Image (cartoon, rainbow over all chains, first blue to last red; front, top):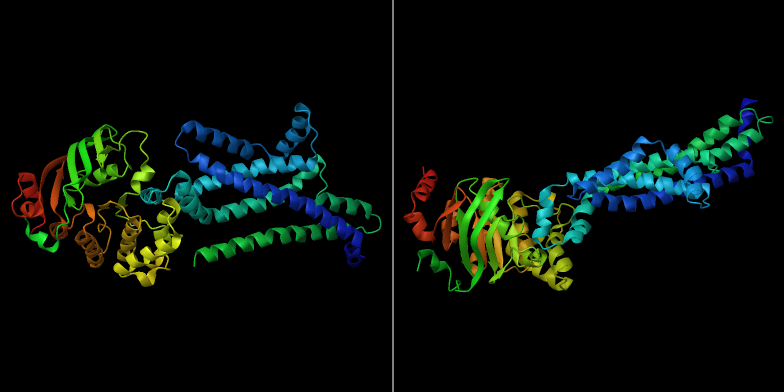
Amino acid sequence: MQSLGIRVLFNVKNIRRLLEGLMVTARIAFISILIGSLLGVVLGVIWTAKRKWIRSICRIYLEMFRIIPIFVWLFVMYFGGTTALNVDLSGETVSIIVFTLWGTAEMGDIVRGALKSLPQHQVESGKAIGLGFWELYRYILIPQAVRRMLPGAINLATRMIKTTSLVVLIGVIDVIKVGQQIIEYSRIEIPTASFWVYGFVFILYFAVCYPLSKLSRMLENKWNR
Amino acid sequence: MEQIGVLIVNRKTNEVLLEVEGLHKKYDGITVLEDINLSINKGEVVVILGPSGCGKSTLLRCLNGLEKIQGGDIRFHGKSIVSKDVNWQEIRQRIGMVFQNYELFPHMTVIENIILGPVKVQKRNKSEVLEQARQLLDRVGLLDRQNSYPRQLSGGQKQRIAIVRALCMNPEIMLFDEVTASLDPEMVREVLDVILGLAKQGITMLIVTHEMSFARAVADRIVFIDEAKICEITDSHEFFTKPKTERAQHFLNIFQY
């Protein structure tokens, strides 16, 4: 009986639906990681400003995403935001917005930390050969900061992928929701479906996150040559 | 005029390149430089001497816009470079500076370090810059290291590359800020030889150093600073044989066993 449970995964329709769900998860995660990383670099550079009020605003922005749980943000944006602004956004769009905002905040902090850790002398050496503000960041500071922030950034990316499982709360049909539906649907016929389906979802998440860890290790090795 | 001058043929001119007048510099209310007056002619080599913490390095940093000054004037080619709207990015291309800590950019190879400024800032032709960079590297004996990363080089090699990096911008004057201070003793010579070579070519230089015999060999004039003030400006030979002030005398005695 137990061993027959795996039948649930031999159903092509089930697998296709799970992979479709995975696409939703991956889409939300990767779009927000991509935009969040780019905006995060911008935020990180702004964060190193001398003016205190600029740094305070950045800090408040980050803390808002650290302190308030992501699912509260999803609720506020999906149920509150759309009504207040009178716009009609899909759950997936709201998810991408929330995850991008979160990714930007955390990435900004990582970039800021990496930039701050670079020796002041790098800045002076750059200035001494006539580099202006943007050239200094473009050629000297950001390339070096990227090397230093890599472990933190990859950690953030995997955390974001995993946290996308919260989007079911605002009605997005992601890989986990699809899994639940399949389990519900086949509960009578296959009582152990939950084990197999969730086990498969587990492997899918691993398959998405593992290449990232691998990539980070590869880049680290390359830069440590 | 002076004995060291034999090495150097007709390199000094009467054209004033850099002028400092009544410069004041304070850090949090503490005066580090007071009423500094100094002028450097084109082709001249001026060495600044003085005890640690007297403000030598700070003076150099002021001349390259890395420090704000609280009073006085700095003129480059007769034009003031202390007002707010001075384009330091442009001036720094003409006033080269080499620091104590030979900060090469660790993520770039030697050659990339050198051509970054000329190509990206001065927008010069890359192949022309590469050729110049290789010539300069050859001259400091490091052409074979052009594709190395800074971490693969010794301190003395890094410092020579830092000098080449500054030279490749074709500056009109070079500022050297204790460039041998953090080197192992056996590497000091190779770096000083490079600077001496530049002096012979007639490059205008302002040098802060603690190497007395080098100062004597390279300098046309010595500026002696103590307690934030210039005590004396004397011809190099005269300074080492009969300094005018007691403080300078005292300072020179410390270096003799």
